[in-house]
Amino acid sequence: MKRVNPPSLARPSGFSHAVVAHGTVVFLAGQTAMDADGGIVGDGVVAQFEQALGNLLSALGAAGGEPSDLATMTVYVVDMDDYRAHARDVGQVWKRLVGTEYPAMAGVEVSRLWDETALVEVQGMAVLRD
Image (cartoon, rainbow, N blue to C red; front, side, top):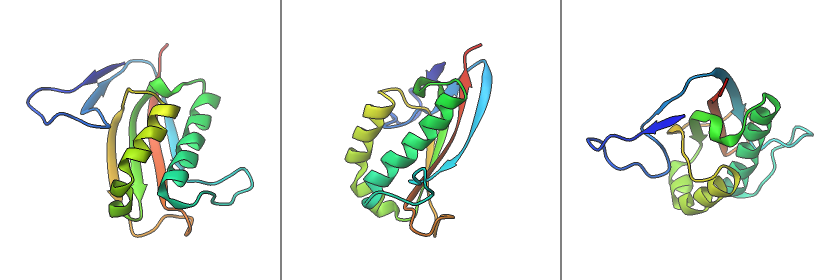
């Protein structure tokens, strides 16, 4: 997988501008901070991001992938100001669970998520090397 960050664009922080990959594509459903019993867990956006990202990585692992296979990810949050205020902590969660490589990413504020108590949802695509 090749991460592309042209010098003509602003230096990315916490994402890559583009990702080039060849292989089997895995589409990952949106994941919230839902536990195995179906309840939303985690106090605050950082804890919920950690659970949601963990859920996404569990689905990816079950499909035969690993965190470095993530090609793109969208983070949906119900309060962008809160998410940005905790960006450093969210980044630490990312580094602990995924590492220092970043997929092409987008962050989107939404009025609410499917689960009313969810603060964050992550969705992505991965490319497994054939």
